[in-house]
Amino acid sequence: MNIAVLLSSFRQLLDKQQFDEARRIVDEEHSLTERERISFYFELANAQPCSVFSIGFYEQQSEREGDNPLWSEKLAETYAFNNEIFKAVEVLETFNQRHPDNHNILFNIAWYAEGCGDYGKAIRFYKRCLEKNIEQPEEVHLKLAVIYTDHYLDKLTALKHYRKALSLSPGYKAGLFDYGGYLQKTGDYPAAKDTFESLLSTQEYKKRALARLVEFPGDHQSADIARLAYQVSSHFVSPGAFKDNDDVDLVYAVARWFDSRHDYDTASRLIVQANNADLAQSHLNIQSIKECHRKRLTGIQAWHKTYCRIPQNPVSELDDVSPVFICGPFRSGSTLLEKQLSAHPLLCSGGEIDHFFKFAPLICGGFPPAAEITSESIDRIRRTYLERLDALRTTGNATVLDKRPDNIEKIGFIKALFPRARFICTRRNHKDIATSLLFNRFGPAMSYSLTTETALDYLDRQQILLSYWQTHYEEDILTVSYEDLVANQADTVDTVLRWLGLDPAARNSGSDDNGIITTASMEQVRQPLHNRSVGRWKHYSELFGN
Image (cartoon, rainbow, N blue to C red):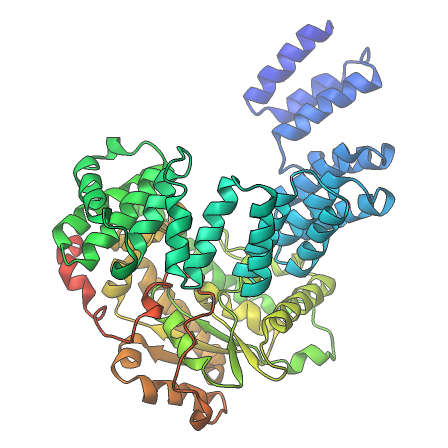
């Protein structure tokens, strides 16, 4: 067959996703040279990255042409696409051992290591990129700055890398924007304001910078923010007004601005528009969202019934480790509780550690089958997590508080890894949570947050899951009410400390507001404790129907 005719037929089959037939016509064409056949297979592998064929093809080419980085990069990319990011890192590290000076390989090892939560390795390889004089080193410094900010809460090291990135490229807009976010997270509003305002003249970052400036506490806001807010409220009156993702971000921010000024009607209109824009982007509807999360949350229980098949080392020094988790629904007070508890000298803040989120992805239908988990992978997950805790620990014997809210859905998985783990689960009025979810952009990735109906349905199902965990691990789970925390902070926090076996009298009554706060609550938790958010849903009762 003429190769042009074969190529046309082959690509038509790819367009129809008839991959087996596409491979058959290539296999049966004996006139192809080896190089031509590889080109066809390469296109076929790219068209179906989830297939066994793709992995097998790239593995074969990596063995045949071991010095060609393309095949190692494509194999790593395919492993990552199939949620096997550790294997992606291993493939690239193997190539790096033979070719230690390849900049792309070094950067991708760091990037994939970051993606699977191995931030220590990511830092080592990003630094190696700098040692090898990689092009555009400001991007590497920015990567390092973000890791130290968001995952190690290390202000000084993060600042060093932000400054280095901007000294190498003073007009580096991505660096300026992230640096402004760092300053905001550390509470340096005057410097953050100056940084974001410097981006207002740029087309790419103008709306993003405006969205950040609107969020600043009143005494740090620009004088013309009110004018901007009213302009936005009059412009975004229909779904067709949203032109891009930055428009949606800006409307979320302006809706919160009106809420803070008690203009609940305008805030309600804008926040519904913003969430509807995200809902349209998700290509889901209310019923499909409910069904997806129903299957996911019930799937977790089904997975848990098989977790005893996870390989366990008969004796391990890690079995005595007892990490402490603060979890619960998003927007239920976990950040506030962590702030109060970390005033104790034997506790320190770890922020939202994304470790288990990366290793136990909650795909629709449940966890990965237990049969796929090996003793080696279990040991790696445990040890890399403890390395994260060691890096976050402020004093030698302090317990790091892991405050990732959705760890509530991974309690069974975590208990299989760390049998002595303990969980402090926050709870709050579901309508107040649903209201807060609406006003914080979690987007299609947390699709239940986009309407009050889906949020309430999800929260009810999550409560059922918590009850299930309590039947199995009652002694290791303590629930804390947000309403109790804001009404009677001292007694509530003391109760938690005693449950942890700590002396409440050792807690420092003051609090440090100069640390890095990386959650959606970063502005609220810097304010004095108040109960204004209790019953907040009543300002938006029309969004809850009957």
